[in-house]
Length: 207
Image 1 (cartoon, one colour):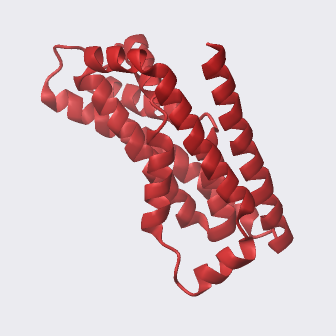
Image 2: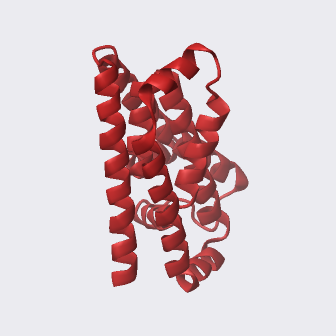
């Protein structure tokens, strides 16, 4: 059982560690609004990962064929969503964001939902889970319901641990950044996300 739990935690970490658009988004929010906004955003991404892990565990054969059939459309939609997030972050004003935060108008719920939406529109994460499940012999067909629940919880623990560590580290540097630095972070984060989305479109069309 301990080996099974450790495998789940490791898979959760492997899925979350690559710093893609959601990683940039969490870092940007931590620097602009504080550690907890980044952590809540990471929780949104973790929920999406958990959803894909659940799908991979219970509906593997159907999902594989569905995604393969509509792969081009799904990837283009995902890239468009990422592009819109990038443009929004690039144009956002850190002074206004800080003002809203001080007035108590910021919403953890919005941070959670937007991060979840950004992550859930990337079904390629499902293929990561399929590959890792096969590599580590995780979620075999004969596994009991109890084992599946423990496995999903282990993945959740591993994924959320990464976001907790990442945003805590970034928050340390947040205290050393002024308004101009926050403005620059928005521009860099937005640009990186836009580039990532355009690269995604390019590779989708190329393939």
